[in-house]
Image (cartoon, rainbow, N blue to C red):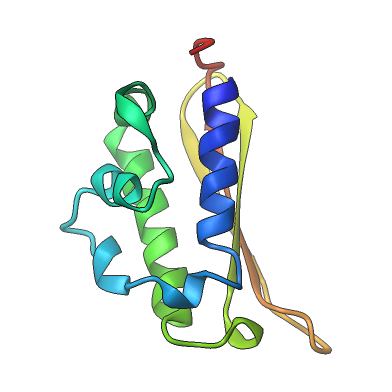
Length: 125
């Protein structure tokens, strides 16, 4: 599980409200290779992490990509106080899945999106 924790920590840094506005929505267009794009951002590092992520079902990777694209498109070019913040989480499960929640900002708080990944326990690498 350590590799997953590292990947999600890097994703949370890249897509928090301080950084998401600097991302290019075109980088996450649905015709792009999502794993390759998150590798270019340093979220997935090295062959071992890339192999683990590429072993996820395509439908889960596409759902995650769509959620990231939506948040990045809404935040592109905006200052941190106007940007959507994205938080990635993971939970063990019998199979693979992705759930997305959005909570609208109220009384000065920011809109937040949680992208929760579910998968069987990964190997120790």
